Image 1 (cartoon, helix red, strand yellow):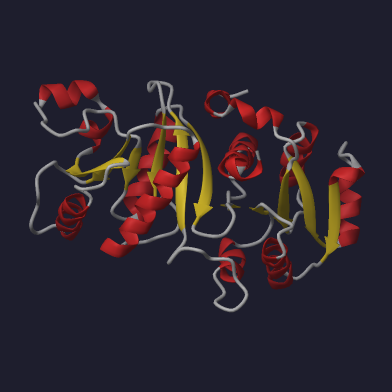
Image 2 (spheres, helix red, strand yellow; image 1 turned 90 degrees about the vertical axis):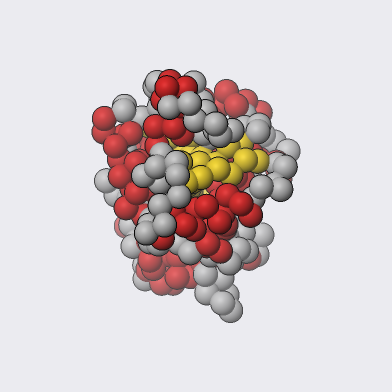
Length: 305
């Protein structure tokens, strides 16, 4: 197992002994890589799968895997929109605890999730939370948003922060520290995100469950040595748990830099719906997909014990 999966299991060991598996809808499931993750998760008794796709194609693919037929149900729907609608319907019916994206564009899946009449959105908007294990750090960190929200305004930022805090609380992180990333720890009046982050930090001053601080640079957020060297006086001293990115470029670059040059491993989940939604890309590794399933299981754990 990877360092990420090891850490996820270490912070919530009870996930190994839940009374029943996670019921997961897999949208457009006829894909070898997706089914490989499903196979592993089923063998470890993590999930029961509703496999939504063309039945003939799925049946032929499943012959190449060793998956207990009592651990999944095939729902014969080939059309992307119909498959996504069915997954959302299963959530509304209380049959599904999480959704996994297969061979379907993310936009088509999330369109059904946020549908005003038939969707399952519980927050004002959806946001993506990336959980990362970085070898040089002794803790898990989260980054938001690296995949969905392009340029959040202040109210959107609050939703992102709250969604990320919910994820880290599920991972049993105490005294959560949220860093509002910027180019410097001082207000830059001509930089709109710096102004917004200054206002955000002020509005969260009375928050007692977690700390929100910013604007603050990446090095002060992640390096205790840098915070000490610069004599930074904030409550975050290189020990941030959540990195809030002021735009999708910042979030995406931060994630990929840690992945490619910091040997980090990641899992991701979309928050803001009634259940976690996993939207890993086709280029994502088997490990990332599987770790994301595990993260979704942890997110729903307290509801299932």
